[in-house]
Structures are given as structure tokens and as C-alpha cells.
Length: 182
Image (cartoon, helix red, strand yellow):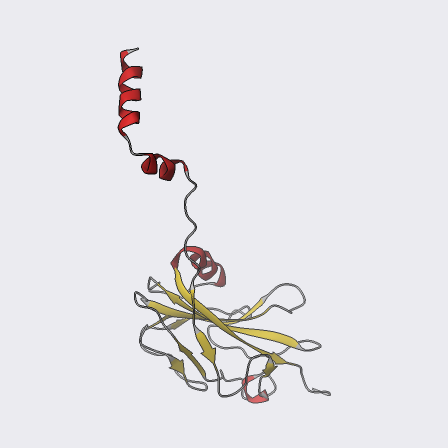
């Protein structure tokens, strides 16, 4: 009985605002800020030039991003095809890009510390668009992370970080359809 009375006295001494905060559900984490992702090779929803595909030199297009927020420890890039027949196909995944880097040139070597993970063809590095049929969309997504992974990551590992470790994100979507007769 005595402990019940002490508990009630202590509860009465707690300010109402604190009780409300304790009873409220946790506040959702703020949505990531937006990065601006661009390429001089193609615009949003525009065709990707053949030189960046399996029908050309198969080199990565130049990419640039801006508005990297303070606190960013590394940048990651994920390029995928959500229109692939069986599942979203990963064409390129790069982690460990220094936060001061704001662009990569065409077919560029990765900056020091950056590492390419394996694409869905099982190779580390860029694999250009090569849709089996029809026009596909290719998402070039850039993530500003509050950690540096320090190693190559899989798509699954990177996506697991998105809810809690991404400070900003942006994407550039290009399209590609293979030329007739190829």
C-alpha cells in the first residue's frame, strides 16, 4: 500500500508535458533531404546514349550531385533496372565515395576509398543497360550516408541502411531500348 501511495505522489509531481511525451508514439525520423542528380549525357526520363550501354562502349555515364548535407560521411551510388523481367536488376553499386566528391566523369576511375560491389551479373563494376526487350527505365540513385561502410556492399546491405543512415538521396532516371537487329 505504501509503495502505491509513493508512486502516486511521484506521478503527480511529473509535469503533464513529460507524461504526454512518454505516452506518445516515437516521432518518425525526418525524411531524407533531396540531392540533385544530373548527367550531361542524358536528362530525366530521356534516352541513355548507346555508348553507356551493352551496344556501345559500356562505360558509366558522367554523374553529378549537389546539396550534400553536413554530417555526410560517404556517398553511395546504386544503378538498377526496375523493369527487368524477373526482379529489379542491379547494374552498378558503389560505396565509400568521399563526401567531398560531387561528380564522377564518364567511365571514370573511382575516387580513393570508393569500392564497387558486385552487380547482378556477378561482376564488380558498371554494367550498362541491355534490356532483353522493350524500353526500360534505369534509376541512377545517389545516397548521402552518415557512415562509411569501409567495404563493398551488396544491394541488400545498402537498402538495409536507407531507413536509418541516409541523410539525403536523389535519383536520375534514364531510359534505354535496344536498337533493332542487335
